[in-house]
Image 1 (cartoon, rainbow over the protein chains, first blue to last red):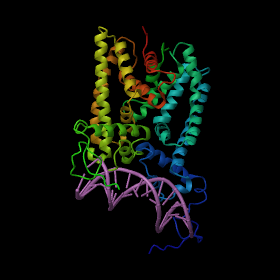
Image 2 (tube, rainbow over the protein chains, first blue to last red; image 1 turned 90 degrees about the vertical axis):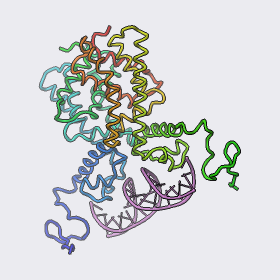
Image 3 (cartoon, rainbow over the protein chains, first blue to last red; image 1 turned 180 degrees about the vertical axis):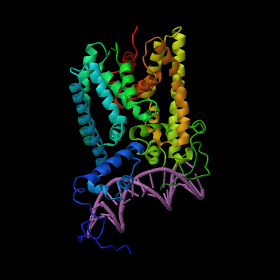
Image 4 (cartoon, chains in turn purple, cyan, red, green; image 1 turned 30 degrees about the horizontal axis):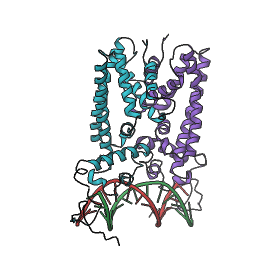
Length: 222
Length: 222
DNA sequence: CCTACCGATCGGTAGG
DNA sequence: CCTACCGATCGGTAGG
């Protein structure tokens, strides 16, 4: 009954009778399935947490069988690390792009405008569409091994390093008071905490949050 | 070999030969063991997360066998809820005490001083000694059922309600700008995030953090 | 990437 | 509160 002739999409007989039909050359070998796994894992890790999510859940969400994720990732922990690294790479890329675009549009961006761009981009990465990766990184890092944690922290330092001169400039102009290092930590806290309460499309927009943060943290607004 | 005479601490023969010796009347029936379980659970839930902590871990940490926690709590989730409710009750009690003490010491506390008291108390509850309960509540609430979540949120609203008039007063005086509701969320974010980076006894004290927060969020400091 | 499977662990319970 | 236990689930693997 279920003994269909084992042929590929092109009608040629295949060597292996088991498994689902192979994709065409366009769709395979380019890591599509790996990306599907990453996306599914990010979503579930965010919703339920790392420990509460089974690799079977992830496999099902990606349309695979229970053992298949281990073809792409050595173990569950490596999948978590990959989610975080992917998230940080995207975030850093987006951040660099946003800064560059703003610098081109308006000549000689003020420190205040720089911070606005950074905050707005951070909120987008954190709360925008397709953004499960960074919340997972923020809230599940204790599930990583020490080695993987260091790799993630490397990218995180890189991401945060962009903020340092901006905050320093604001401090020099008297627009930001107190220890800039503590200010950075508290600013990130204020923003990252939005993961816990922000509801997309309800009352407050990301632009609203951006302006509120600037108004709250900076003095002498122009 | 291990057939010791089954007698209680008073030397009287006991009816049951199994289990460890009963405590004297002073030590039992007052919920000591339950408190031990709560403390152990709070510690482990904070360190490893709820899902990654087994009830066996908790039992061992409290000096019990694997089945014993279920004598005190209906299930693992009820233990989590109890940790959170205990934490919120302590926090609210401490907060009320701190506000009262400050009001008695200095007549007519300024809004700024009120906020200082609230922030300082919040940091103590969050980062001080014996403070695993509130971090667990902040970071593990998604593991609760809807009913339990509502019970916790009730206490949380009560706790946060104390802050509302203080922030409103600061806003009225121009010391706090923008939407006070967003300001409250961002302030809590800035403080709660310290759970992720604060290291007790290293560089920054809780007083340092308190002053930094006030300086960062308030305008026109006196 | 699927099938079939394993050993370990987990939350929870009956009975005392 | 302990003993002894159960069914379910989980991460992971061998072989194709």
